[in-house]
Length: 104
Image (cartoon, rainbow, N blue to C red; front, side, top):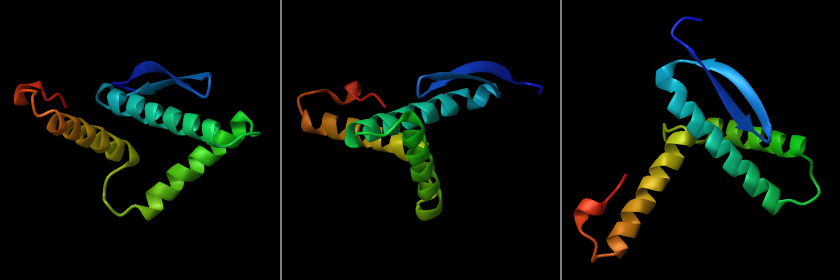
């Protein structure tokens, strides 16, 4: 593959070496972060399952998001938007902070 770089991703305690386009690396790493967050939530919410069960549930959640969400945003984009909105809300709540402190 031309114009790709090798990266190592970790998911559920395992490493995966893949090749990606440099401009897609950040989005792919963000997607892995979202997947790990979902896995962590499942691990905390559900007792007595093994890692394969959690991975399957995470995949089902992702697939369901793809067919039921009509906003036009991917789950990664939705999480990024949510983080930005939370940052804005935090800044608005702290009215003593200058507007230049807003970091998105």
